[in-house]
Amino acid sequence: MSNVTLKELSVQLAAGACSSVELSRDFINKINSLNKDLGCFITVDAERTLAQAKAADAQRAAGHAGPLTGVPLAHKDIFCAEGWLTTCGSRMLANFVAPYDAHVVERCNAAGMVTLGKTNMDEFAMGSSNETSYYGPVRNPWNRDLVPGGSSGGSAAAVAARLAPAATGTDTGGSIRQPAALTGICGLKPTYGLVSRYGMIAFASSLDQAGPMARSAEDLGLLLNVMAGHDPRDSTSLERPAEDYNRDLEKPLQGLRIGLPQEFFAAGLAPDVQRAVEAAVAEYKKLGATVVDISLPNMELSVPVYYVLAPAEASSNLSRFDGVRYGHRAAEYTDLMDMYKRSRAEGFGAEVKRRILIGTYVLSQGYYDAYYIHAQKLRRLIAGDFAAAFKQCDVIMGPTSPTTAFKLGEKSADPVQMYLSDIYTIAVNLAGLPGMSIPCGFDGGGLPVGLQIIGNYFDEARMLNVAHRYQMVTEWHQRVPPGIG
Amino acid sequence: MALTLDDVQRAAHLARIAVDDAEAGAALAQLTRVFGLIEQMRAVEVSGISPMSHAQDLVLRLRPDAVTEGDQRDHFQAIAPEVEAGLYLVPKVIE
Image (tube, rainbow over all chains, first blue to last red; front, side, top):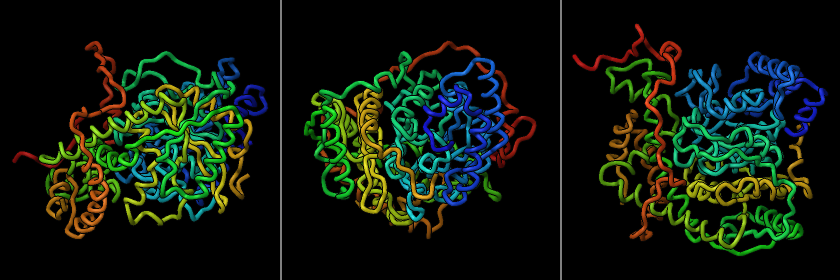
């Protein structure tokens, strides 16, 4: 039962083939048997989950079921969910039981979806391997010596290991797409502003965006239909009419113009990844697409620009954690200043402190123009590259990540090596564009490779169409990690 | 421009994070690597380009100045480290 898509679960629940309680219990049992090895979940609360499932079944019995009523999903532990421990992967929030629901959680609940638990993540979403979590690493279901990517590593691994049919994630520099690629699942980061950030613990507010993670493009669309929508509580939430993101799924791809940026196929790309991505592009040509060579000349600046802007915003956002109103407070201190300093020194891990220090430095007097404003100017150049490219093509394709999954500990000693893992994803966040990753093959070691599809602003329906047509003629997205059934 | 131990300690103080000398030294080594990466960006000429602070050109919305939420003090203070009589307690600031 757990090896089926959201779409299939929706059909089975509607047909009365199973109840939400049975389904949820099935997933909880699987979580209980595998979570010790994989570390996907920080919090599971069977009682709370089954109560929600029971309510969903009652709603269905009363004739008020929507397409996803009773379907279970997992939430990244960055989303506040009332009554649930919400840690954001940090010791700072080890005792934080959220007093309210994030907009995303509220919408999933309103759709009748059932929360299976809160998934592990890099601390405050800062990381690309899920190794910075205070609650221990997540292991990649394809090979447990490897990382699942990050920061939404728990969500990705849970979906890959069939511990949840879908999950929510967030993506500031690649945190949905890179783990999706490394675990062989699908993930979509929508256009900035499509999904409300209310109740989503802030990292870099001008870049953070929530999105769905699932096993097929069709499932991503189903979940995005629930997650997206205007919310006046987030000042950057866009006011747009509601749309069905799956409305164009079946459209033929005849005449689709695919842009291939030369910068995505340069030095640093693993040969096996390049081969798989090129094979996917060849498949698209068979489906009627044409290929256009394009250039994103300022791409290589995206990593340094990001590591000024994101830490700057983070240093400001994370100043709220002061040990006064909630979260960790040091046991011993001499005065108020000492209480702040010790609480934050104890509550934050090494990577989070590093980024706060970078951000504080680049925003400090005398350095603000040279770093922060300079980076914001380059951000405009990077966004301009995409605007020029989309005059020549409908979607842009390339690898999601330069390599397949790497070993636990392999990059944790050198932050710069870790940061470069997001070299193909970061520019998309800087521009605010939608981007997604879908499985497109395997490397020589049997590890999944992700194909990145980047669309123009608000072009999610087209991207899902492009991904779905590929998934109709390939079966990479249906592969299951060894030993997972 | 090389980062110094003083820079690290100054940033840590501004960020209200306690660091001892050993931690500051370790942080300096790591931050020097990161700023090596960041320096690549500083070499690019940017005159005449306006800074981009946001993905969308948004106009901030206004809302009516109306009460929309009831009193939730007890609910929110239930997770506070230390409260008394509805107040958050911190060490004495004024002698």
